[in-house]
Length: 151
Image 1 (spheres, helix red, strand yellow):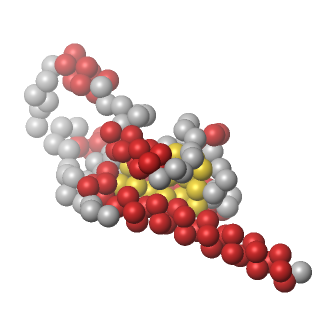
Image 2 (image 1 turned 120 degrees about the vertical axis):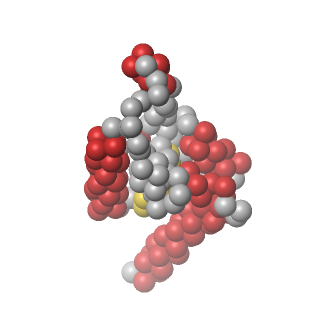
């Protein structure tokens, strides 16, 4: 299938695709701010440049677009029609890089949370995400307290 846009128009359309401060990322940040959870942006020099970093909690959050990162949902399962070989290889490369970065961060002691764009619409998503962030902090605190009492 040929492109419906001229090369100049296609270039303009692709330039508007954002890499930071996307609507899903802003929604996650709003949830964290509303819950009073502090965070930093920019990845703090970590592999993969996470979207949100919580140093004290040792938690990083990646907010992924379903199409660009090949999620298994209707939006992520769409196949590009124009230049399909290139885009499918790019999406597969993104998935491989995401897995590698998550493994590297996990090995370094970070907890990696991946938030998918489609899941943001689920009822109760905010509570589940916040509970996951808080539960591990509570578990880490109780483990540290138990360790301090056992010595």
